[in-house]
Length: 371
View 1 (tube, rainbow, N blue to C red):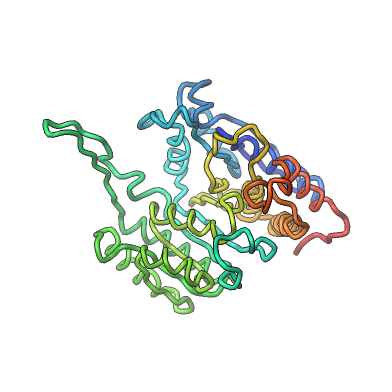
View 2: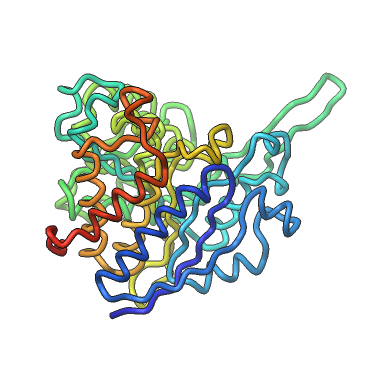
């Protein structure tokens, strides 16, 4: 039996809805495996701005820093899109990533055979697709300064700054190589070295780091070529490592291999070790989708699979993580579909119903505890 502390930030839009289902699954896992999960909920995003005056409060940051892991939903609303700087709901997640040093973002992409028809690609192109994108999360354009719109006599101009240090590149490439050792031992480093100085440094550092991993094959690919290859031959990829913005874009593209953004989880990991594992923040890669919030249409599977990653990496509970992942796969094989992956509106079930289906599979005594 273990005791674990988890901070829960549902956020905005569909964030609270999908997070609620992930929490229900975690409670069932705790019951079946004999653990005690202590959940503490707090605000983030637009809901925090309205209640606390900022996208994320100092108290919430402290809560997250003191927890074993953070389960995060999504932030942002349609009304808040015109806000700027630190007043934007999205600054909550950016601040969490930076202040908690969550520099390694893992985004696994797996195609469930039963969902081949939901993908944008032909089924034969999806065979054996099982890749993971390791995205650098605290550098690059999203954090570089200056980043502003300036007014001049000739009109407005804007500037954003991409900046990376050698140390920032080394630690994320090293994380990718370590992950490849437990998979198929192949790393694709994605950059734009034919144009960007940051990418030329990225390539130089990744070559040096790869020298420490004789059992791992490293290759380089320009980001535009990678975008093409993800659609042409996605099964060729094992581990992709890349900088912040490229990783953001490529994983949204890769979600179409699986069939929907609502199927892709993520783990954001930092250097801190807890009593159980590696501290991290876990969230579905989809956004807050305010246009469907409160309608029961959201797919909770990415949030539930993010909870499985939380169990594996931060709580050190691989059997419990596998139990959740296998439950999700069985639900998909049974034909359960939310609106984003349903072949017709009549087939679609609600967010709550999908969560309940996963819970029933986790609880089912006919399925042995995963190893």
